[in-house]
Length: 111
Image (cartoon, rainbow, N blue to C red; front, side, top):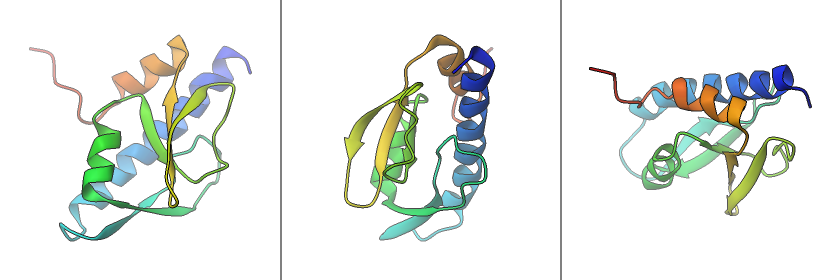
């Protein structure tokens, strides 16, 4: 996959992450919450269920995304966690890591 392709995948994942940030705030504080798969595949509309602590653990690292098992893209990310409901992937390359870190909605603003 070329650099542009890797950056496109990272932007897709960052977009789904932003959608999920909005979805999190509108759901109950406990139990399983519904999120969209944060994979880099165009047109993916699969849903996954995470608890709030699971979601917060993923969001603690801007390079990590919660996705449907089987939606990982081996060329650009590593699976770092597996559950029966979702897997967590982490971006590993420089161009895509920069994209997801710079688009992290929880990134502290520069002073």
